Image (cartoon, rainbow, N blue to C red; front, side, top):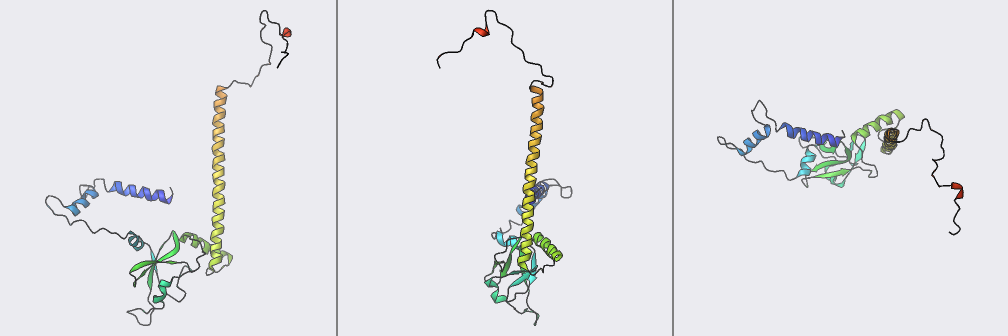
Length: 236
């Protein structure tokens, strides 16, 4: 399965799980959850919780994060530079509890696309997107970057050289695209061969067997008909 198909499968699995009776509580978990919120005849419920309206904030809150100090050049994570003007007030800010130490801030990111960091700005009280400092670099996943770093180490390319590291990612993508295209062609060719084999089987069953052909001969003579007496027409 692809990742998207696996995610759908997991959602359906959880939905089915919560609808099955559990021996420990005697009822399905979904029913127990409703009883806790809405209550029963003998016990009042706690009521419905407040609904989260900021879905983007909740999604970012669940993303993994890395703590970094903010420098004049921005933030560096996995040898990649990120920067946005919203970071200016937080450059080299001192820790409020430990004097002489720079304050670290959490930067969230989606491992599937690390081209953007998410920084909670305490001034505006909202998350802000922090892009690559070099905006010409393409979006990549953390796994692509790790493989590129491994390859760069083999070739003696410094990991700090963002251009060369991302060039390795682009080269790998081209190889994968070409391999995928070849695989598609091979699959199509294999499918055509299977179709042709099946068609040959049908032909062998339905068409005359010509493995032992017989020689052609003149048809039987018809009384009163002489082929030599037939003459071509004079007009068109």
